[in-house]
Image 1: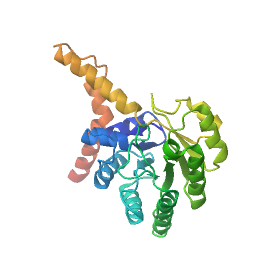
Image 2 (image 1 turned 135 degrees about the horizontal axis):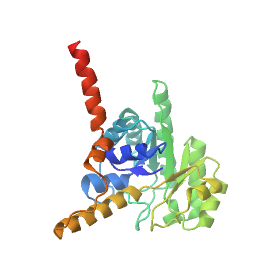
Image 3 (image 1 turned 90 degrees about the vertical axis):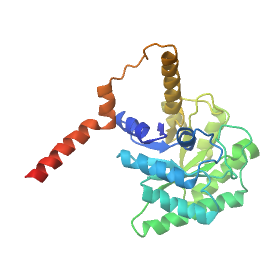
Image 4 (image 1 turned 30 degrees about the vertical axis):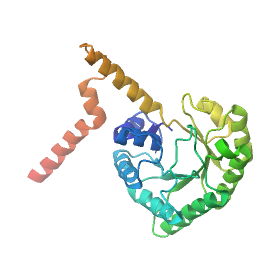
Length: 274
């Protein structure tokens, strides 16, 4: 599951034949605000970015919703907002606000009771949404490993699955052994977070699947590749050299949808004349 940070990156993921994507909170904060993933981006900004991403593709999009942006009532509002924006899934975490990227230092989690209340609120809001035709996958994330230890992370993961969360995401295990323990102890579908040079070992998808993970998210891979490519291009331009770009202008137009736009315009214009 390569993660998107804007509509274009989501479209490229779909064009590469991936079956789903996740809107990365780190990626959106970086690309939209050029600010760190430390709770600076707002619910409204995430929702607007998510709406643009969901409208750009036909594959399911999961959305990072951080801590839910407030108390349990905010969690419910956030879940309903994500459904209306077009998200197929929502990820909620148990960090204190302001939250931080899961692979950085100084993050703290709320009490187990408050974490349970958040997921309870989300499940309750989904049940209400289902009565009027809405639905969404709930990914319950715990960051407890970093400050309270793996045992507490597993206790929270089990509690979240019992409450009705569809996917359990225990963030930042430190070793393959810890990843194995998570998979053995938690029976619900599990997600692994593959951040290059992060805390968790980056393993091949086949190995993750054999361990028991259902989803493998790559939240920063496309963002890092984009930043590196732009830096290299800027350096070439600064030196007065021609940028080393292999993608043609015509191919770029194709990726963005110029051809489809022109074809649809011709079809609609012809219909109008007739």
